[in-house]
Image (cartoon, rainbow, N blue to C red; front, side):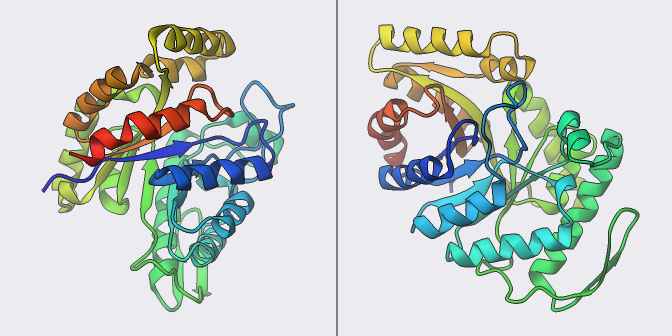
Length: 316
């Protein structure tokens, strides 16, 4: 049976005070979005002077001010927190939200942030090994009464995490990243969802083939893994509105390699055009879209999408 297609709002904290982000989450809930996701950074790349709230503290506040919408992190940097303490924090948020937490994690990539906050910045291979140990500890802390773990990077000795998460056996775990040799193996072994990041939709056939192979090797049913995509959407009620919004986005992101990755797979168009583009992605196996609307802190695109696009997928 095909999975239901869901839509989420991904809104990094850049330039928005916590109260404004909480208001956006409440509106997303009212409009019927599946989930609301925030980022885990110290600041916005290239714009350190703009305010940026800490991820877990903000997520707790959103959990307390909403009732139905699921709330997630896209993604937590594994390096920034001890994995046993992270399990405790995420469990607490799962309780505050009455079982609505989505736990998104990644290996970390922003060297400038690591250095600024006093973290070592090891090789990508080392960060992936750290992530794997972190995932092992996280799942143990979510499910076992007492946890003992001795790895190359982390050690836990007779650790207790009570109460356990509301969601059983634990909150859904999403992994962000697309390295075919290691990251997608970690998805096959530890995750409930794989999030296709930024420009990697252009290679999604190869990525999904690699993930299927890893699932076969570790004895995992590929069908038990859901696939999401982190995507920019520029939607307008007519062509002039679409083009105006797109030109503004290009001007704002000009010169940023990170943002150019988003633009390479962005969806722009009127509601019928956006629906058609999304259906192409659904045919690839994507069932959750974590959307950064190109008007960012404004509300128009989020409301238009909910009104004109989401019903098309609710009907199948």
